[in-house]
Length: 116
Image 1: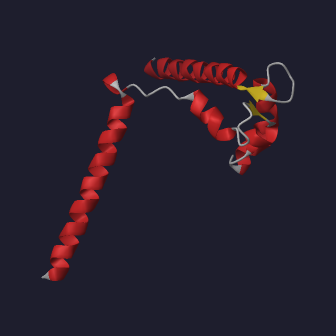
Image 2: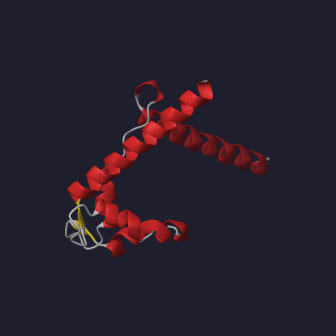
């Protein structure tokens, strides 16, 4: 009997935790299921290991999967708009916004082609 009660409590607790997580995720999507815009400043700050307000190529590559590291040099060069070897927050935001817009256009184009 104790084992049955313990099992029920664990299952109930798991369900409650999952429901809370799902609810939080749903709230993050916002109105009409739209995804929340990425916070580029937060992303930048996480990558800026020495907190000097600039990303180096090494900081940019840190914690990237191996496959992504292969293209990191070229991507960093595109982000580093003034070619000074570092990327400040404004360069990062501009590049990420541009990349996000390109992805949105690509997705819209694919959706339009699929609809036809």
